[in-house]
Every structure is written in C-alpha cells, then in structure tokens.
Amino acid sequence: MINILSSTDNTFVKNPKVPFGESITGTTPLKKITALLHFGRSGTGLLHSLIDGHPEVSTLPSIYFSEFFDYSIWEKIIANGWEGMADRFVSIYEVLFDASSAVPIASKGLKFINNIGHKEGMTTVGEEKNEILSVDKKVFVKELKQLMSCYDELDALTFFKLVHTAYDKTLNDHNKKNLIFYHIHNPDNYAQLNFLRLAPKTNWLVMVREPIQSCESWIRKNYNDNSYRNIAGKISQMLFEVDKPIFQKNNAIGVRLEDLKEHPKKTILALCDWLNIKEKDTLYQMTAQSKKWWGDPSSPNYSKEGMSPFEKISTKHKLGSIFSENDQYILSTLFYPISVRFGYVEENLEKFKNDLQTIKPMLDQMFDFEKKIVQNKKMNTEKFMKSGPYLYLRSGMIERWNTLNKFHTYPNMLTLLKIN
Image 1 (cartoon, helix red, strand yellow):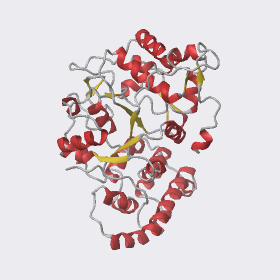
Image 2 (tube, helix red, strand yellow):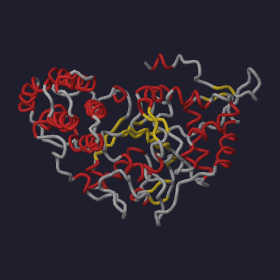
Image 3 (cartoon, one colour):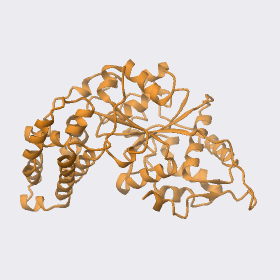
Image 4 (cartoon, helix red, strand yellow):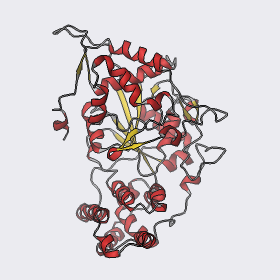
C-alpha cells in the first residue's frame, strides 16, 4: 500500500522561482516526530495538554490535523500553486487561527466536524476561562512563505514541519525545538499510511486504558443516540488497534492512562526518557498554546471547575453501564492478550483457552446491548442481524477469534512503557 501511495503524481510541488536544473534546500526542519494515537477513550487530550508548552517540543493544538496527510488535503493546499499554498492552508485550517471558527475540519471516513475548537475546549482557555486560542494569520503567512522560499520543492511532510516552525515563530516561541509532537489521534487508514510513507522513522505513542472501560466510554454517546453503526465500527476498531502493522517495524510504545493518573511523576519521567526530552514543570499542567486548558467538555467528568490532570475519577468508572456481564465476558476474552500485556488482568492461559471455546458460538448471537438498541428503535430482530454494521462487527470478532485460537495472543502487539 505504501508503495502504491508513493506513485501518486502530486507528491512534490516545485518552487517556480528556482531556475530549472538548480536546487536549494533550507535547514532541515525538525527531524524527529512522535505521533499520538488513541485506544478508545483513553486520555490522548490529557497527554497532549501536558506535553504542550514544553520548550523542546513543537505541537499544534487539538486534533485538527488528524487527516492532514490524506490525499485530498494536500491536493487542496497545492490547488493554487506554490504561491497560494500558505493562504490555502490558512483557509482550510481557519480554526488554528481562531478556535471559535465554524469552518469544518476533515475527520475520519470523509466526514467533517463543525465548531471543533469549541468542542475541544479551545474557546474557553486561560485562568479566567474566557480566552479563545488564536494565531495572527498575517504574521504566520509571512513566516511560512519566508521558510518556503528556502526550498526548491516541498512534499506534504516538509510543508507540515514548516507549518510547525512558522507557528512557533508567530507565537514568539524561539526555543530550540527537537521534537514534533503530532496528535494524529484517530486518522483514516489512508492518512496514516501516507504519513508513515513520508515519515517512516516516526515514533508512535498510544494512550491505553482498561479495554472494556475505554470501550464503554468511547461508545456512550452513540449508545445514548442508538447509533449502532458507529458503535459497531468503534468496537471493531478497538479490537484491531494494538497490533496494527505500523507498529511491527517502528518504534511504538503504549502508556497506560491509569499509570499517568496514579503515578504521574514516575510515568512522566519514563516518558521523558522515551521522548528524549528533559523533565519540566509544564509537563504537570494542562495547557493549550501554553494557556490553561480546562479539559474536554464532552467528558462526563468535566465541570465548571474544569478537570484536574491527575484526578482518578475517569479510571474508577464501574463497568456495566452499557455492557452486561455476558457482553463483558465475550469482549474481555477477545481483549485478553491486551489486558495481560498492559497489566489489567493476571495471566491464566488455561482459563483463557476454555473461555475462547466458550465464546465461539456466542459470537453469532446478539449482545445484550444490541437487544436494547433493537428494542429502543423498534426494529425487526432478523432484519437487524442481517444489517451491514451487525455483520461487519461479527466478521471482525471472528477474525480476532481465529487469530487467538491459532496463536493464543495477538502477534506483534504494542509494548508497555516501562516505569521504574
């Protein structure tokens, strides 16, 4: 797939001011990149807010750029040629320059999110909770164009790096940056693979949380809305998340949300060592663009007082608000290798083998939460069981079951960050 992506025609854009046959290359911008991924609802926003403001790290706020490396985004940026690239970037990502902007941002599955700055808590930052994140457009465009002029050609990755440099300069942040911290969050497969093609040495960081708890939290809004299609897609995605092919040949690590909450000092020191950055006081404060961030407004733990970075409420939620004991039994068996790897359950291979055989016929039956959705929507059960989302979820679970039945684990799983 990566080889196919490399054959696209619009990979590089030429600088028309550089005579044919000549070449210039500016100072190589920020070589190191760490990309942050989620595992259900696992606290990526929290970690991003702690990394924000570190003098050695360049990071853009929120999850605005999760689809930046999709073909369609780069096509839009270069639509008006070299001279129009900076202005096109600004028009596409208006929310970066004014978090209250309603201009929609591309999301997974060719969907767009309106008012994303508001939804991500970027319009209520600062000590008084009355500031809106903003960046001076004119200064940014001037800085970006000046950086671009030092190159005879650009691809999406180099342009992305220059955006970070221009962003820091516009904010008068003149610290020497050693690392780009890219909150890629939940990208589409195309965007993620294209990014990997351009930046094969990327370090991948995944925030992990107890699987059943994380899954319940992630699908809660969809469950309340009886949006079964989204629920089926999310459960299936989580089942395939921690042994992605991209982790097999790359430097990837998982950080437990529980460790960050319960042992912040030890966890952050271990993370600093992995990221190769120094420990700073900013790592214990929730900020966005170095302004106080009050948390994700969509979190059930969000209040008028905001959220404390190391409160433990989010990791103490009781299970069962959506999944019955029967549902949990099936899912916890499929999540068993992940739970063992990340220390959520004790290893018991013989019990797991028995559980695996027990759930096989259960995979063809309805979950209890599915029965409630059918009841709420007054649907025909037989029709529901023939629907695309229902069959999609079953195909994913059966494939996971086959892997577990053969290997009794998921080969090439993500490893856990070691904490002293």
